[in-house]
Image (cartoon, rainbow, N blue to C red; front, side, top):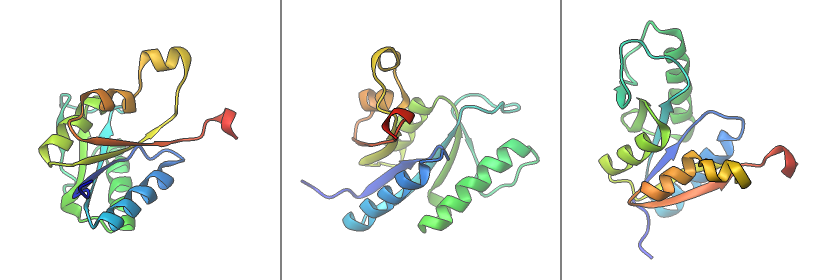
Length: 150
């Protein structure tokens, strides 16, 4: 197996995000790979932008919700030692933007969190499932415990 050279961590800032980020950082260290972080804005209204819009991480905004998300991404990047040039903030549909960015930056591994859905939720799909079926690189889905697992 060839070692991974560029790992894309997808960050959603959930309560289990730190576990996923730590595992991605460990993989990057083991493989001596570059680590990039992507946060897709899909749950806040964005003024005057369409889906697929790249939001500059290094340019402050007057939009409070955007600033909050940008601040979280910058803090995570600093915590993991990721170069600010490798932090990505995009407004869009998560699975589409993850796949699109992975191809753009030539990532060879995408790390996502997965709830391990079953039944109807599995049929309806999830971000991890959508990425799995459309990405041209490997995908590592870190299982996020559900309330039933605890």
